[in-house]
Length: 255
Ligand code: ATP
Image: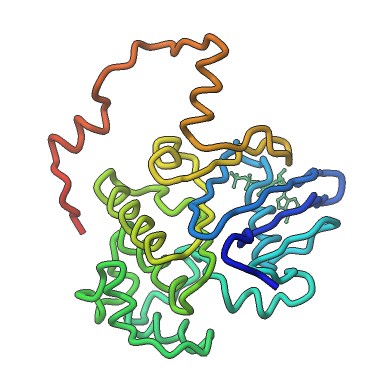
């Protein structure tokens, strides 16, 4: 039986090998309800494999993955019904209208939703009759989040949601993530953008060679580094190139 303070995600000593390659080598962590939990790490560190085990898309060799009190191995169908997984762009049909795409995903989940309302959550209701092929990169990313929301997920998995987006579209997606968090969902976010993790994540796991080498809040991770006497190579200025870009081109979305 679960109660409000139980973790919504539990990963317990997860391990996974692909032939000779050890992708996940004993990963354990817990995520509390309503957290945005970041997974950072170099390419090939084992983030996707870990996330796919939690989603029930991949079997672990050993260990336990529990979502909302349910062991993923015991009941993957129940787990899939309560999670949202942001899909890769190319999984969509180019010639379907956005409202038809949302409707299709709602039917897959047996969810009763108004496609226009779902599109409005990601600011795409005004493009409901547009075809997928006609969308900009930022709009495609927002649509991929929209379809992950059709079943009102308890846990939303976002895999590099802002890769390839301009700074305006990236910030808009950050706003969307905050809105989804405020709505009560727990979010697992993998990203290669450190400023994105710092901005959005309540806690971060840094993964390397299939193991978690650090896990804490962004502030605590930075404080731990500074306490070692670390000094950044460049003098930190009060603005960065991102600020220059946004100052020159404005915060409005272009698409
Ligand atoms: P990235 O940041 O590049 O997405 P990642 O941290 O998500 O990387 P994984 O995709 O989990 O890392 O990969 C971990 C290791 O497992 C890598 O060495 C990768 O080559 C290997 N691997 C991943 N999927 C498979 C697969 N289906 N078959 C064989 N090896 C795989």
